[in-house]
Image 1 (cartoon, one colour):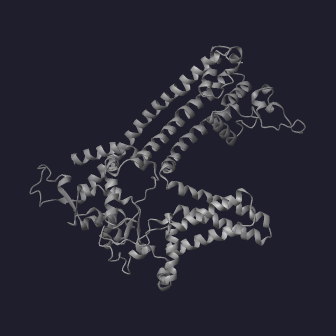
Image 2 (cartoon, one colour; image 1 turned 90 degrees about the vertical axis):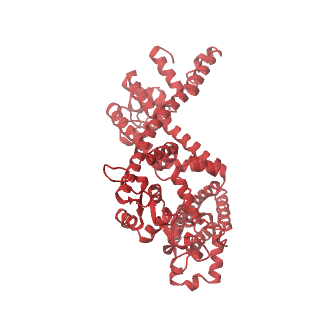
Image 3 (tube, rainbow, N blue to C red; image 1 turned 60 degrees about the horizontal axis):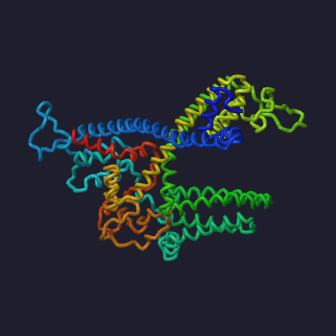
Length: 563
C-alpha cells in the first residue's frame, strides 16, 4: 500500500525520484483510472529529468569552483618557488641593464637576470643528484635554444614542465645482441627480420590471428589451441629480439601479452606433464581469450572511438580519489549499520526440507515481506563484508526501498528510513553526481582536443607545456620525431604501432653515442630523447591542470609580469 499518511507519501515520492519503485507505486492508482498516469509522469519528468539534473549542475559547479581555487593556489605556489629559486641562482644582466632597478637592495628584478651554464648544471646536480650529466646538458640544450650560453627568466620557468617529461638515453637502448654480437644483429637476415617486425602489417597479422583465436573459442572448435600459443609466443620472441627487453617491457600492451601468453604457456606445459589434457585445453582457451582485449588498441587508432577510450583513461587517476571518499563513507555507515542492525537478519537457506532451515531470515517480523520473498536475507549488517555489499546495493539504487523497508520491519520504526535516506543523499545524490559531472568534463575536454586545429590548441592548452613539446619535437630530441626537414626519411618509419616512437634508435646512433651525421640537427649533440607521449596524464593533478589551463595560463602571466 502507498500514500497512507503524509510522511509515508513523502517517502514514496522521494523513492520515486530515484525511480526505484517505478511503476509499482503508480499501479494501484493507474488500475483505478488511467488518468492518474498524468500525475506520475509529470512528477517524474519534473523531478527526475529536470530537477535532479539541475541539482547535478549546482553540485558540480560548486565542486569545480573549489577545485579551481585549490589547483590555482597550488600552481601559484609552485611558480612563486620557481621565481625564488631563479632569483637565488641567477646573476644580474649587467650588459643590458647598467644599474640596479631597486636602489634599496641593489637586486635586479627577475626579468633582468640570467642563469649561466655552470650554475644551471650545479643546480640540477644538487636537485637531481642521481641523473647523468648528459641529461643535464640535454635540458640546457632545450632551454637555451638561441645558444647564447644563458637562460633568462621565461626560459627558466619551463624547467618544471621539462623535468616531468620522461626521457631515455639511446645508448642504454642497445640490445644485448647489438652489444655483444653486433655482426649477427646487423646482418642481412637479422635486418630483414627486424624490418618485418617493425612493419605495421606485422601487428595487423597478429590482430587477425587474435580474432581467429576468439572465433575458435566462441564456437568451441578444439585442436588449434597449441598452434595459437606457438604463434603468440613467436610474436613475443621476435619483438624482444627486435627492440630489446628494456624497450619491450616499457609498453603496457607488451607486458599484458607477456603475462597472458606466459601464463598460458606455463599452465599448459605443467598440465600436459601431468597428463591433464582437458584442463590444459580449457586453460589455454581462457588465457588466450584475454588477448582479444588488445583489439582496444585498434579502436584507439580510430578517432571516433579514441575520444571515448581516452576519456576512460583520463578518469582512471581520479578513481582513487573518489573511491577513497566512497570508502570512508562506506566504512562509516557500515559501522553504524552493524551497531544498529547487527544480528537482526540472518542468511538462511530457502529449502524448507533442510535441517538448518530458518524461515523469514531468522526474524518473524519479516514474515511474508518482500525482503524475504526476494531472497534478501544475505543482505545484512552482521559483518563488515556483508555490510559493504549491502551498501553497494543501496548505492546502485535498484530495490533500495525494499531493503530499507525490511529493516524498518525488523526495527519496528519508520525512523530507520533516515539512515538509508542519508546514505542515498550523500553517496548517490552528491558523490556519484560529482563523479558523473567529472566524467562529462573529461569527455568534453578530450573531444575538444581532438577536434580543434593546432593553432587553436596552442592557444587553449597550457602555455608552456604545448610550446615545450613542440620545441622538443622540432629539435629532434623526441622519440619518433623527425629531427628536421633536412633529415633523410628513414626506411624503417613504418613500425609496429606499439613501438612507433622507437624508429631512430638503431640507425640513428653511432658508436660514440651520438646520432649519425645523416641528421643535421640538435639530435647530433646528445643521445637523450624525451618521450612526448600522447597518453592521458597518470596523476589527477595533471588532469586538473588540463581542465583549468586557461586560469593557470592567466595566473602564470600575472606572476611573470609582476616579477
